[in-house]
Length: 347
Ligand code: A3P
Image 1 (cartoon, helix red, strand yellow):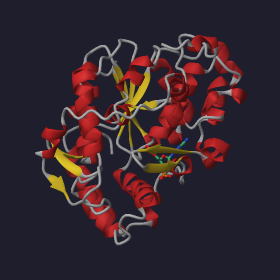
Image 2 (cartoon, rainbow, N blue to C red):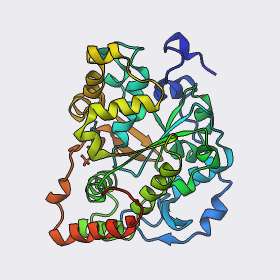
Image 3 (cartoon, rainbow, N blue to C red):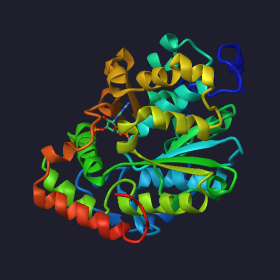
Image 4 (tube, rainbow, N blue to C red):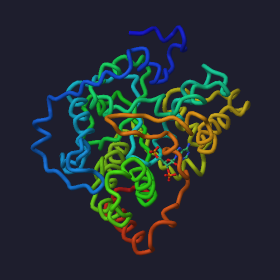
């Protein structure tokens, strides 16, 4: 394993980009062990993907899932070994993952750098914290192994698909969710940007219909939220369940909560010096969006180019009002209400 301590302080997360570079970068060697099983699963004619795409949706354990990520999920189920200090950031895509990555990375590394020279000033949050199923899907599981403890990793998988090694009682999970109406709009813009060239006929209305049916790269948003919610009720000390809107409304309160949960609570001296506010500021939408790395950089996986700028669109609650009719919004709300009925989730 590379000696990151020469450059990075020990005992706090190292930017994932550094680990990739120190280990010879991406060794794309996709695991084929589950491909035969995947080929037997029902396929969905998802409008944003061509029929030959490696990103087709398959039906697995009651949810649709992009087969590229399913391959990673199955490899994770078989090979991933958690450590008691691991922290997993989980979310349905477009629910605030980038923000959560920034907040946790900044929180855990806050005493290691002057904040104006923090790695987040030169790294996109996705370069600081890895996306597990992506790495497993392209055969990079050894890179996940190479991350020094404490590891912080991210997943978009449904709770029911996580490997037992993650759902075991030792591991901590932080889950963020968001109003499905805003997730839908955010996802629409994101997918359109990435797959624009694939199918220009795709319309927002079609996308909306699929979303209502639970058709998407990580399945039904309602199943996703419920899976983590139920588990957080059983093990609140291990699963922190948060809502995007609440963090946006009271960032300082949630910054404190996050710090406490990951075992680095703010000291009184830090509180008095305004460190919490500085962390919140460093991770704010406005600050991150304006950084050069987030204006110009991009990630490339499996020929899919994602520019970092596309992770910072509006960063608001309620943008759905600019995209949906009242009927569309009411229908989505009714689905949410019905799905969450009796669960205790505050909508
Ligand atoms: P919008 O498209 O509604 O603007 P994810 O990170 O899970 O992909 O979610 C992306 C959404 O989070 C986008 O929402 C994006 O603008 C918003 N976002 C990204 N960084 C943020 C930040 N620091 N604070 C608040 N929202 C942020």
